[in-house]
Image (cartoon, rainbow, N blue to C red; front, side, top):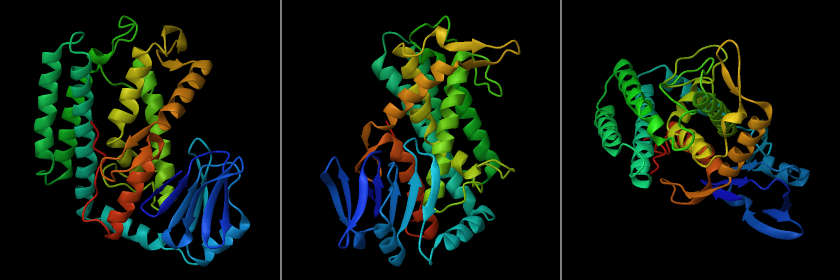
Length: 342
């Protein structure tokens, strides 16, 4: 459970959420874990099985407090709100931004966060494994990404931003194999490929990115944004462009480092993959379950959010960023603060 930006997150699946006078109470095994005045809340987000009592929902409707429901894995199920709801105003502003030059500022923030976090994935590898990797090569790539970072905020058009992002990504993935320390003969990585992935590392990266994109889409829907209208990724039918925007800054630490840890800790081994005659490589069914179990375990780890300066679970980071994005679009924040992690 966590209260952030006047939003109450209930992440314990078996918790009971109910109304007591004018307070939201969270109880588990007969013990009251949290008691928060409704007066202090704008939204409640529930990941629990039992949801909320009808009495609480009725009071939330009166006070225009939305209640969003997700399953324990973060899949968005829906949002309950009263007669009045401000999401239409938020979305109209989102659409206006997407159609004018303000979208570039948001796109620059997303990409700045991505490059910063790519740099620190490399720097962490240098710090932790200096005796096992080519540190000079990694330092060279880190310096290149730093130079691109310095240029990002000065860029004045989308084409140059895409070029800077693409160049940094090429340099980053060119040394990704250096960070693989176990079973290097099997887990070879030459470049990022997909649709379909043609090697085990790309298979895991693609799977992790799919999971992360879904988490970002659900987070955006919870805060009332349209996940299909982005600021960096172009609109396409069926593509959640804003979710892809939001996940850019989260990829390096949330997905890339997660895949590296699975390999380097021998949690995923050569026997976990199936190779198809077409050349495609995928995790086999049992291995996907193992992957998902580790993914959920990672999402329960506690960190200090670099902007909010509060303890949160890794799994709540997409929701924190979606909330910050919504606040920026509403005008409550001067600019969107990307997730910058070291």
